[in-house]
Amino acid sequence: MNPNRPNLIYVFADQLRYQSCGFAGDPKAITPNIDRLAAESVNFINTTSSHPMCAPYRASLFTGKYSSSTGMVINEIRINPDHHEALGQVLTKGGYNTYYIGKWHLYADQLGHHDDPKNSFTPRGPHRLGFDGYWASYGFHHTYWDQYYHEESEEKVTIPGYEPDGQTDLAISKLQEASAKDEPFALFLSLGTPHDPWRPGDVPPEYLALFDDVEFTLPPNYKPENDPHGDQWASLNAEQRAELTEWMRVYYAMTANLDWNIGRLLTALDEMGLRENTILIFTSDHGEMFGAQGRRAKNIFYDEAVRVPFLLRWAGHTAAGTTSDVCLNSPDIMPTVLGLLELPIPAAVEGMDLSHAALGQPGPEPEAALLQGMGATAIWEDGHEWRGLRSKQYTYATYLVDGSELLFDNLADPYQMQNLVDHPDHAGTLQSFRDQLRERLAAINDTFEVCTWYRDHWTEDRVILRTATAS
Image 1 (cartoon, helix red, strand yellow):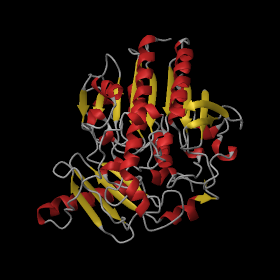
Image 2: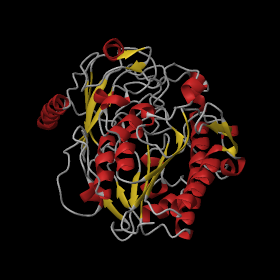
Image 3: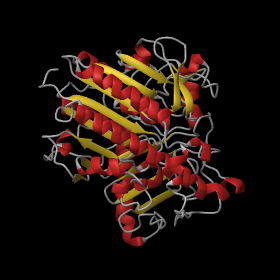
Image 4: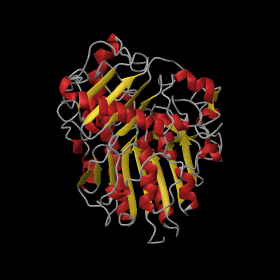
């Protein structure tokens, strides 16, 4: 293995919010291995998911662009690979052996039917976005026992037992294979937990037992009525509201299992001698509301949904146990990673290279992270669209359907319970964010359309036919 080329391991959980990690201060979390990794890493404390849903996040991660440029405005549609120079392509061209394990969620062209191979199997070719090496992936599913992945055919390869454990086993075996080669490698591990459903049987019993005596309560910003701007995935009925605290118990149990697997991965890296020459990133695609603000799920600008962990360790290059407060956003990840690897950043990338922040060096940074909500979670339905900005101190957002605005001081009001839009002392701040949002949207040609506009102008049968760079 060439000692001068750093390897890359990118591990991302599904629906793990920043505030539910031990290193972030949650006393209920049992995450000693993730906490240890935080102590060895740069902790990007203001990391946000630019469009906090599964498929839109992945599209931004792999293209360095916002949803208004990828067209991945809802889940369960198929990305157009033709107008993007994606992260996997740059890595492959740069001489990296690629490995992709886990959920992909960028190839389906149907709502539902996600276990049908026509949706779950992504064939070798452009739709893998440059991940031309080892492939063990599926579209999406969120039941975790005896699940499957695809390699090079529609045949389903079963993972016996609990899926995150088996996926981590597979990742460790591929690391052993990769470490024996002379070329550097880039391994992406997309773990499905702690995404719902949160039934007791959805997690190994020994992890659920860790929380038998832990009291879970509704969040301080819980609202008993549904958010009128929410879609059907955000809404809660009476039965679901009664289950919220038990859902939390399973969620934290899943996170504890996730932590155990991260610990196994860290140990394997040390045993293989890969620690010193590997950039290791641990993060998540988005968070979860659990009744906060009258919502469940994600797809909203509140911190429970949009703020995610992002830990970056590169021994000998990054300072262990440090924090960076730059506003790192999903489209910034691709250029930041490529900056660290000293690989070319495609000109069409919309995110910012913040690799200097990881290295503890001064450099330009965004004033705020641009946030987008493009419609309902997985159907073409108007009325839920929003845009927002999150700076180091404030969150500003506005809805398309009625023009309503929200402004929160996240430092003074971490649960975002006091809307400052009508507060005279914050009039200047409000106008500043209005102006900044207008400028940021214009810069990426986001014209703030209704959801069905993308259906009618960009897609056919849930397949994206164009992008912002196409006619």
